[in-house]
Length: 322
Ligand code: 8YV
Image (cartoon, rainbow, N blue to C red):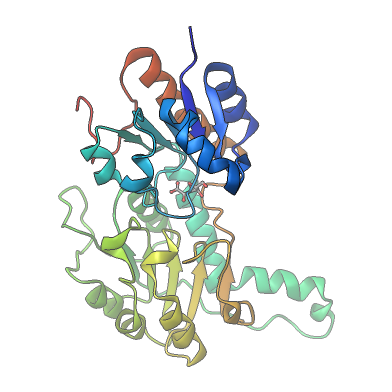
């Protein structure tokens, strides 16, 4: 029996690659040179039935999908699938899957780490000690989580896991999202700006994509204010980075902790020189434990589709049964 052909867009961990190689005919997109791509798209691509996608650099849109007329499923390695036009997939009868749940607690853990690092300046304190500065003087006193109010933008699975952790820190939580949620008692704010005005720390954990692009701009940053802190663990696209850099430079925003950027792996150079920011290279889910679980779910979605004709974790735009 011929093995189904799939495309993998970027290198994945051996755990995934080994399993994919064992059951599929794998085309490694990143190894197909610019010149060879034309021949590939005219030939082998016509037999491709699946894709395993790891955070596509550009939008995986309908036009791209159309080059694979037998495409049935796109399995995304990650919970956020803003790099895939899921509506375009739906209209073509292509299933999109993602990796929900298996990374929720990990990303929430990281968010609390980033929050405390930003408020208490842990990376700066570590660098201070390593440079021998402690010998000369104690590390300067920092801001505190005590007496602060936290706002969460996007109270989905990860947002709720973050909120649960913040409750243990004994600080009040409120939130903004597409709608008020019945199962939480936290105060709801109908606009991000009103939420930003009411809190000291704003945590962004809403999905990326065109609907949320730059929802954190000058007005929200100014509402958060000179003593305010922005934490972003969602997608860089939600924040207008030019406005963010300006607000931090002019002191209109107090501090920022960022795990994500608009054009990764790039980031605004001006941020690197700032003392009041903590920058991480998109590591929210990046533990061996959790990346293995995400990888396995990616493989399992493809395997379930080709073995049993159903996905395990389809995204809402391509529900199953479809
Ligand atoms: C990963 C993520 O960085 O799940 C997501 O949406 O952003 C991350 O867990 C990414 O998917 C893997 O490259």
